[in-house]
Length: 118
Length: 113
Image 1 (spheres, rainbow over the protein chains, first blue to last red):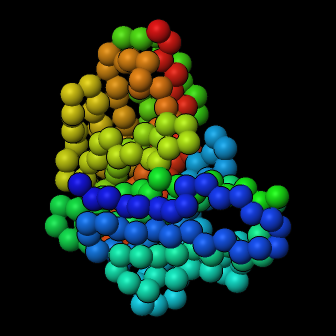
Image 2 (image 1 turned 120 degrees about the vertical axis):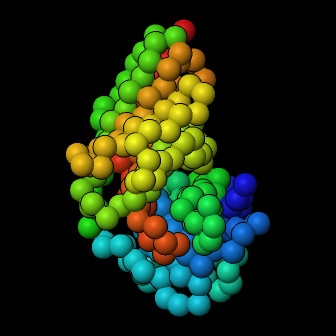
């Protein structure tokens, strides 16, 4: 089945620094990837839709200059949390949707990245 | 846009009993409805899905039903086991790689041994 790899799984950084999270589709091409943020015991909050070769589409209330998304290839999307602050501490999960055949509807998640900003 | 509501938010059942989680959606154009299971600190895993041209789908102890007219779908877990304990999310989406998924708020299921 489809596999999505996400790194790093855990990262601790100092306030004011930037952190990059990578999301890769390992065995399929993903023209679209989704980035979610999840608070403890809460649902998945869509932050942005990452489109290969074009700008990401951000959800209302998500600062695009704060959360930079780059989708440079059909298998890689990155999320950079710039000038991180403690309130950015969270669990970030990427996902990719298959683009053809019976896999066209299936959304596969990465393992998530636990960000802690000190 | 689409709005997905999920109930209950928490559910406790005795081992061996059945568990039912219900979701409603608002956009009649949604045609794909997956269910995800998420264990603590792990990624959501697809456990079953249903498309709008089907009313029911079953996979061993798990089944999903869809009522397009009423815009609701349900997850049924029979003969529950402690390892079924997790948070379950329903979702709704339209077909097409670029269409996002709209998730319910999750149900924390606890199966009591």
